[in-house]
Length: 107
Image (cartoon, rainbow, N blue to C red; front, side):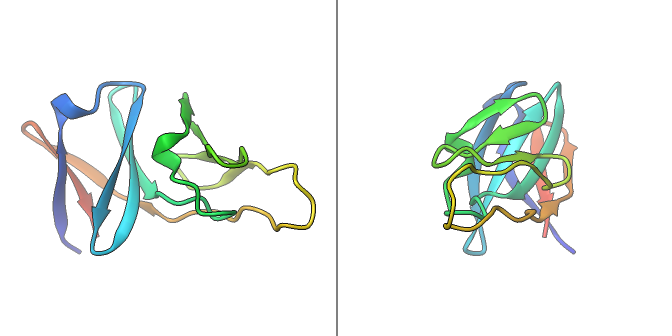
């Protein structure tokens, strides 16, 4: 595994999130009460950019159809309510670390 610097602490205040791209992967980076979490950034339902959704505590809501995911585990908290177009699946997560003023993701 290797750690890749993705942001500075000053760029991600508590209660906010951002999208980063590493090796052609879109990743959601979230700050919840000073702890940093990283997971796949595209919704597994219809590929909505999760960083453009809303963050409530540890749960991010997709801006496209409303699927909700726990940023700590990538697990689906609630499904979309649209029949016949599939369901959201859990998303992969990445370990984060902070060194000095920098945020890193392990790939």
